Image (cartoon, rainbow, N blue to C red; front, side):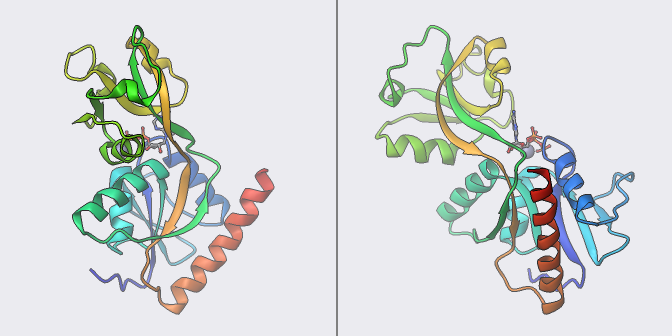
Length: 226
Ligand code: ATP
Ligand code: ZN
C-alpha cells in the first residue's frame, strides 16, 4: 500500500500509557488537535496533519507497511514486531527519529517467590508465559537456554498460579503487580522507552519538510524540559 495522502499521518495510541504524553508533545510542538471525539482519525486544525488513534500493538505494522508516516511506540512493541516480521519475511523497516523521555519500563522474567534463581540456566526447560515471545527467545537463545513459550496477550501474571506456566516474562515498572501475584522479578531482559519512528519510504518533499519542521520543534520542547 503506497501512502500518497497529501496530509501527514501520525499514529498514536488511542488510550493507554503512551497516549497522554504523545498528545502533549504534539500539542507542545504546535499542533492544534480536537481530541474530544472518539474517532479513529483526528484532523489537525492548523497543519496538514491527521492523527491515527489505534491500539499500540498496531503502530509498528502501520509504519512498516507505510500506511502511517510517523508513529509513537514503545521500543518493546516495536522490536517484538520487527523480529516477528523478519522471521515471517514481511516488511520490517522503519527510521528512528527520536527516543522519548517517557514510556520507560523493563521487560523482565519473574518466577514464584520460592524459585531458586541462580542465573538464566535456572530457566532451562521451563514453560514461560509472555506477550513478547520474540524478545524472550532472543534473550534466552543468547544465553543458550532452552524453554517453551506460552503466548498470552493478557493475564500473564496469573499463569503460574493457574498452572499453565512455570514463570513469566512481562513488563514491569514498580513490581507491585508481580508481588500481588506471588511472583518475584529474577531477570530483566530489555529496557524500553517510547520512540518516534518514520516509515522507510521517502515522503513527498512537502511532507518531509513538514516532518523536519516538526522535529526542530520537538527538539526544542524536549530540551526545554531537561
Ligand atoms: P492498547 O489498548 O493500546 O493495546 P496496552 O494495554 O497494550 O494498550 P499499555 O498498558 O497502555 O498498553 O502500555 C503501552 C506501552 O507503555 C507499553 O508497551 C510500554 O512500552 C509502555 N509502558 C510504560 N510503563 C509500563 C508499565 N509499567 N507496564 C506496561 N507498559 C508500560
Ligand atoms: Zn497493546
